[in-house]
Image 1 (cartoon, rainbow, N blue to C red):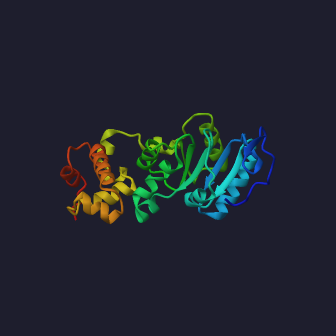
Image 2 (cartoon, one colour; image 1 turned 120 degrees about the vertical axis):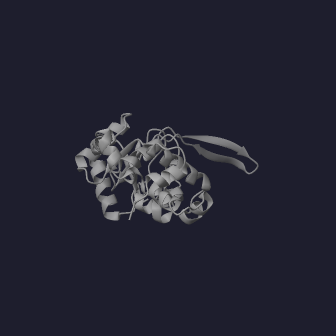
Image 3 (cartoon, rainbow, N blue to C red; image 1 turned 90 degrees about the vertical axis):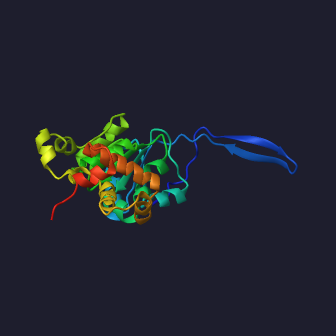
Length: 245
């Protein structure tokens, strides 16, 4: 965490006398009633600092807590409560480089009860839908204005789900246009990485090793490829996506 909050009395705390062999010991039973929090996790220091200041001004009834990574958040030992919001910078390219399961596990590491909003440089519809299916409540592309980003967060805080309009527009269009387009354009970076290895005839176990993921995760990606292409098996996936030289 970038700054430690000033020490303060905990409202609702009370002293309890405990009888012990060495006399009376005092303990404090604390009922913490802190303000709702927005936990901002972003490795980009300039963006993190600027965005946190804007959030503090725009949403003054929330405490703003910042971290450079989820690992730093874990080390700080500061969890979250139901209703808190976690704003997480997500990079799909890093998911391919460092292992898809690492990024896929981020939402599960945060745990239930938090409203997770992702900041992302990508507007890929497939990527957005995949993250929403994993539990995210909002997906904010970094090319939107600050005003739109803050309103999206307010929507999520009120119980809604934010999806950029550009995503919905990209998924619209006549069926014939969709069929004539490169079918691979609808895949996420992780699905594309799996597909490239399927096209080379590699088994799920080999793909899992090369991409540093569980074999069960590879099977999930293969099923999603089959579903998106409207085919019945992995052989048809390869045939459908084959590029003639």
